[in-house]
Length: 184
Image 1: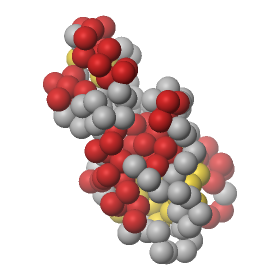
Image 2 (image 1 turned 180 degrees about the horizontal axis):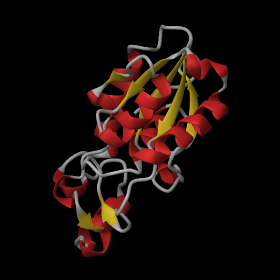
Image 3 (image 1 turned 90 degrees about the vertical axis):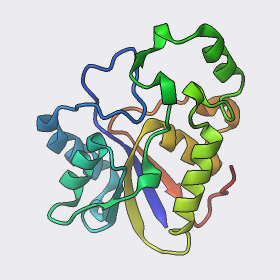
Image 4 (image 1 turned 90 degrees about the horizontal axis):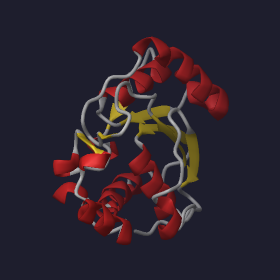
């Protein structure tokens, strides 16, 4: 199965804030333009494939715009990484020693005492395993953290580069589950 991983549209008023799983607003009026752009990059398959979404509103709005008149399939496993006590706080207010500890081990450290990238990888691999034997194409509307982890799990990014790899809002990333190496 081919998966197109799509990052949600740009959130409003989050500059400098660790928002992770928090619900944050997006410009709903701009969603149709993002959906059109994503469809153009995926091609005609985007109009007839299954669309999965994180339950976060910023993802659901885009997934609904892309799947209309159908509804997207909502999957809890597609949520962003849980940043625990860091959620909603400014990055420059977080304890330096905790940020340094995370920088030393971006894969196993649990920011804010919550979820590590390794735990996100386990969640992703459990979910994507259910699609591995299927053929066809699906779109997954989700978050930067989950996309980075998925790309690392499928051999596109190494551990050293995955944390810094840019995942732009509205960007599209392709994974072929049939040929990709899936490891955590």
